[in-house]
Image 1: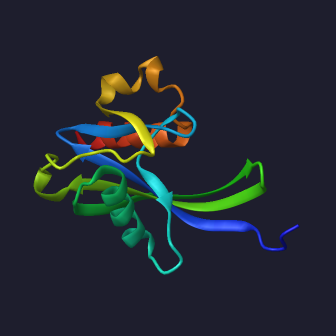
Image 2: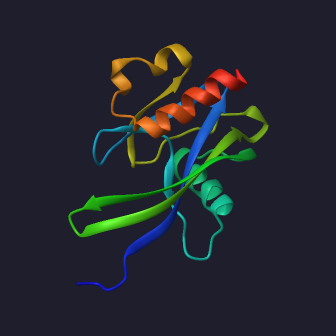
Amino acid sequence: MNPYPDYRIAVEAIIVHEGKVLLAKRADNGAWYVPAGKAKYEETPKEAVIREVREETNLEVDSIEELHVRAFKGRKASGDFYRVMFTYLIRPGNGDIRSFRLNDEHTEYAWVGRQELGDSRYDSLLPEVRRIVANVLISRW
């Protein structure tokens, strides 16, 4: 047994364009989520979210605002893991999404507004993430 826990900093990107938020369907488990990933050991959370957005969507980041921080414990086949998750509001560079392209971590995507967020299609979206996305859509648009 490993004496060191699987403890990492992770980031989520709430990417907003024309009043809608990007949701992407994960290839590994079929769940809807927002672009996200773990910070590399030499990265700050802000650097990590910029890299993750670029890797997962091919978008450049124009503005970043920290929205939320939470800590949680999860379980996977190899044992428990711990994350400190930083959630950021992201706007694409110059509002331009022409370069948008999902990487192979996702199978499909949708730009979702307030009405669409309630669609049963997105039931797999984690409740905490759904709440954050809903708050962004309600308070900012």
